[in-house]
Length: 457
Image (cartoon, rainbow, N blue to C red; front, side, top):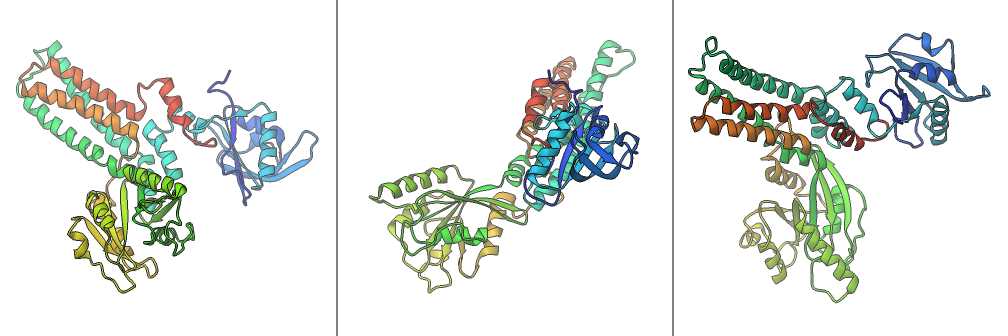
């Protein structure tokens, strides 16, 4: 039976050939158990906390398995809040597996996904919102995502939520006290005071809630479909943006038959690029499947980049497809602008009132303008570097629930209801905000949250 008191271990670095690999061991017996397979100048149990110690890992016969540096952390000053040992091995796959096997032979069990972070939460080393930021930090692929995760991990959101909860609880407690002891607590003018507080709280919640759409794009990237007729340069655009020959490029229309995906990062901008088959009527069975997939990809995209060959006249199919684009999430690229062009921006704007960029996958012309257009569509012209963005759907829903409860309080005040109607909804808002910190959450929810973490975290 697995217990939170077990001593656990897992490889905390990617399992691949590298200069170094780390095995993390945590639990009340971690130092004593690792000492069974460690040989150094002294016993691990004698080493001071927060030290790195040179030695060897040996097997049962005393044979040296690896030359290591062993870090010792003692409760509560460790990531998990427990005694923790980190074995810094050479990064070979076989070496790491061999050392981990020896760790298990001492009575340590395999850590479950996210169990180290779960213990950090249970031991009060971080609240639930900070725990969620750990995986965001690990998976961050842009400067903005990284900085946003660091701010949440450092307690930026937690502090805001704690202040809100404290203020809400104070008002709810005052109402209850006044109802229990009206001689000493006066509710005259309290409605106006509460309205002022409600407006302040809802404004702060609105700033957090309204950041979620952009926050999810910062974390996950913008699902971007490159589409248009055959042979306009869709695969060339994918290769240009990704910086490598990801897609086959030829002068033969219909070369791309299937979906090709690539993730690219430009500073704060992350695009999940999808190159699709050229959209046209075709009798080729394989190409037809590719065209159908291209249409499906367009329907699920956050952003559509529709390419036009600006060196040839627009076809009737182009005109129909461009006219059908939604300008709120589409950009038309006039590709091959390095050639003699016959299609200009004004020609496109007869059918499409959105963003149009002259572009060349050969020279890079229009790249910065394209990036500015994407910023304009999704980030109001650019990301606010001083703003914090909500990236977790769970936290977003908890904020929505808290805001709904405060809306009910506002309605009660507006309808002239007595103060005892306010407290129930105030406490609901208080509880919803508490879920963000991990208060009053069930064991099942905690287990689900941390099960999405990687094994060594």
